[in-house]
Length: 281
Image (tube, rainbow, N blue to C red; front, side, top):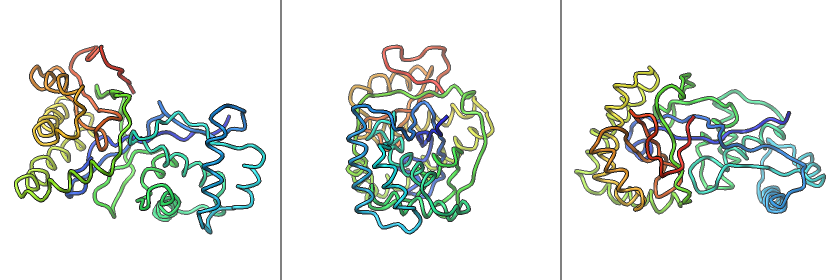
């Protein structure tokens, strides 16, 4: 059976990691990719992209001749990970390339750097975290940009869910809005202290499996984002977002940059938001 490479979900730390908070990223195998030789319509697009990668990327870590040989035989990357969702679609592809065609294996700190160098082709600059999550299929707690650790917890037992907006978005403009907002001293202080503390606490109680305390901080993150991140919340989600805050049966927060993609939720009731496409872990 061919190895699959899962998507990545950033549960906590979107934006605030830029202001010094922790972050928590997990592999999410509801979406994944794998190598294939099967003939399908998507194959042509994938192969063109991979040939462009070979032509433009200079990486001493890969067996380029073997890579090209397999592409000529019909190899392509068959992925269900939607692009523009912040789910690490390029990270999964990079993980697969490294897994199949790297010349030598490195330890975790070194492999992250190599994966980041490979993913630079897609994003200009990459920390290597997305492909690392997909490659190792492990969850990571990011304490700071230079310190990450593998963590083990049961994501399926926390009453967390993902809401699919079915709307792709671009991260760059949204991060630009956030950086512009940081010029306001009150906003900057709020993100570093109030929101950042709730994010760190949410990560702590996620890892401990304490649903009651997690929901408390989850709700406060949702409230802060409602008050200060309106540009990142899709308009069609705002009524449901506010209802969750008012009634306290569930809460919603950004999952990644916002603007579309997935939204992370936590619930106290059995079937929240039935009118939306909910993905349970």
